[in-house]
Image 1 (cartoon, rainbow, N blue to C red):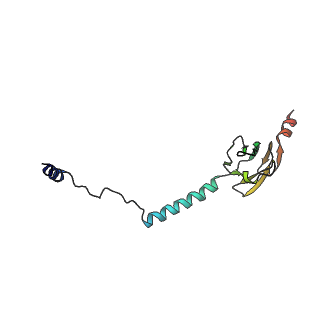
Image 2 (image 1 turned 45 degrees about the horizontal axis):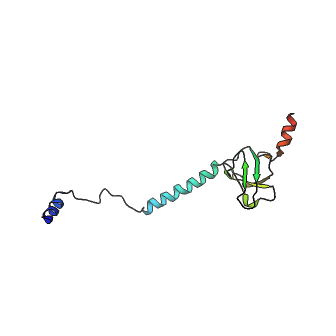
Image 3 (image 1 turned 90 degrees about the vertical axis):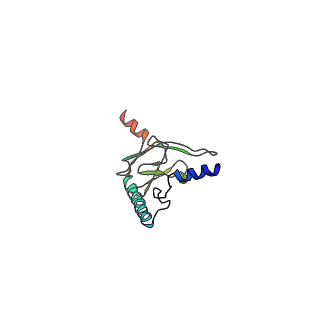
Length: 132
């Protein structure tokens, strides 16, 4: 009886074909197109990261047994649009900041702001005392 059921299922079941399946691996043409698109996105992303006009080092915490934390432009992200903070190159309280559009490195201490256009560094306490 089981054999008859098996034969009936095979006869009346739709035939399965591989026509609807897609290829698992890409062709050489598709791989080259993917590589071109990957390189385009790298080139456009590096040009899109324009440095801000001002960069302010808001704060710094250096711990002997934990990671160093730094706040630049009110954020603790070391990778920001247009620049990155080089935590591994901190010298005492001086923080090197790498500008991605000009490949220039600016060193700031906590409380300092740099004008990227002219390179002038000012201290926040000097700004506040001038207004009073």
